[in-house]
Amino acid sequence: MNRYGSAHENEYDAYYLSQERKRRPKKKAKQQEKSEPVQKAQVNLGNVDVSVLFVVIILVLIGVVMVFSASYAMAANRPRFNNDAFYFLWRNGAFAITGFAAMYAISRVNYKWWRKGVWILYIGTLVLLGAVVVMGRDAYGATRWLELPIIGQFQPSELGKAAIIFMMAHLVDKYPNALRTWSNLGLFCLAVFVPVGMILLPGGFSTALIVATVGAGMIFIASPYVLRFFVFGGLGVSAAAAYLFASARLGLDFRGARIQAWLNPFDFPDTVGFQTINALYAVATGGLFGIGIGESRQVSFIPEPHHDMIFAIIVEELGLVGATLILVLFGIFIWRGIVISMRAPDTFSSMLAIGIVIAIAAQTIINVGVVTNTIPNTGVTLPFISYGGTSLLVSMALAGILLGISRFSKSE
Image 1 (cartoon, rainbow, N blue to C red):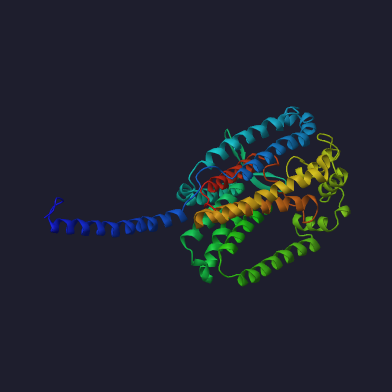
Image 2: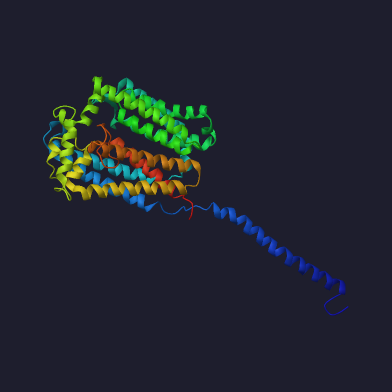
């Protein structure tokens, strides 16, 4: 015995302390092990991708200005627009404000909620496309619009892009190994070709081309095999080229005439080549710095210059420098969209982001290609810039989804 207690009690205390020392580092190690996977899965829930946000804001504001510049003279001289030079400015401004509000609201939504509405969006789009076939409004050789109360003209084919993006992202995420078999590849393609066919049926060739491009691009990215796409792609392009050039030689339809006008528009100066010729004149007039906003000379000759041919007016009034700036902005959008897709937290959000990038990129390339006569003339709006309420709102909604995904991007 001593003043601290019995020998047995001292031995017990020493043993207890040694065991405590052994247990402490193990507990700490376990805590570190548990924290490691959490750290790997950490996401940035703070700010959206600032580059994408500012690019969209700048492009939309440029669009509002350029649509007004391209339309005020026409609107002031047509009773159909109440001889109001600001007719398109007010309407386009209202669409832009609505689009900004929608983009902000959508960007705040957790992208996981979009999974629940994939089939509703897809089937609802098919129903609307069917309604266009039955009761759609015809304009410029195609039936694309529905006349809805309060809303007015509505173009369901624009929703086709969103429907395909969501459906492909959903299928790839839910069935990650499905594209390893030919039968499942066929089912994926069928999901794309159903809305494409319904858009194409009443004459919406240009939008159908974009929807098909989006669907094919997403399937290509998700597929583990590449060779089959070269085979199918080669066959598809060959078949389309054969049809178009046969139409051009035999004069089967207006698309054949457009092919002929593409090959030499100056052979058809008063018919199918008229729009292309005047667009090329506008591009040639612009020079390096343009002739100034509101000073376009070709705006009186280009049919509906505030729609599909807005880029021609941009080049004429802002010159090569202004046009290049706009293309650089689109390039930044595409680049940042790819980065967002690569850093997305899961397959669904990653495919959703890359689908949005493909849609905006394809539409931009086709529009600029038409204006410069690089590809045959077809009616495609320039995203965020051309006049068109449905097109602008859908594009800004897709941008909002992309911004929303960027909030959940993996930390570097």
